[in-house]
Image (tube, rainbow, N blue to C red; front, side, top):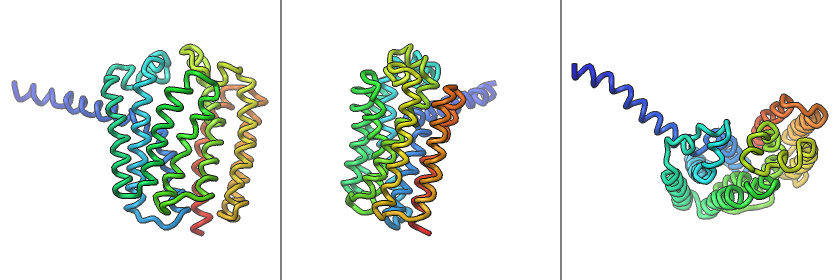
Length: 300
């Protein structure tokens, strides 16, 4: 009888551990990170011929830094996350991870990132990754998110740091090209996130977060999405105009940019949730394909 009871209890224990591990992984926002890490790896390939070991170490350091920022964000935003349907089941507001544990976890991950990158890659890459952590936590999460509709515009700089980290990891310095790549991600962030915020307007309004659709209205948000999409289109031409990338990238950036602007224009004219969702999903594919095109241009 005791043996059978132990056998029956084992799955619960295993399930409990799986839940704990899944929650702490969720604190690092892995879905968001996947695209950031792709831009890091692609930038490294554009910068030179990094070894697999260097790529792995840089990706690990970048994940720890961005993951630490995500965990601290979970800690700070636990009050509003609990009131929003999309985020109510996150580990902290749901009560599965304590706020203190999330905060300590995030800070430890950031520290581990700096130590790992500084000791195995270089100090510049470590410092840039840490600046991304500080920017996301203090500039976006704590300072801007609940104060201004420009939160994602200014705070988006933190999400544009990965290309800088990737370039610094390979070359040990920064130059014009990584700045252009930083600018691409920086100007991509507002139309990408505002498309999502259109879908989340009621929830942001309920918790008092001044996202653009809440403060300026949906019509103005759609207008800003279109304007930023055109601006992004122009910024993506900088790597080619500066002579850093060639025809493969040029053709790809022109085609992808035209599709992005087309989607933004349809959203501007139709003003429906389906168009907002389609543009949001396409924006994810857009950035991935654009950076892959950079690698193809350099390697082929």
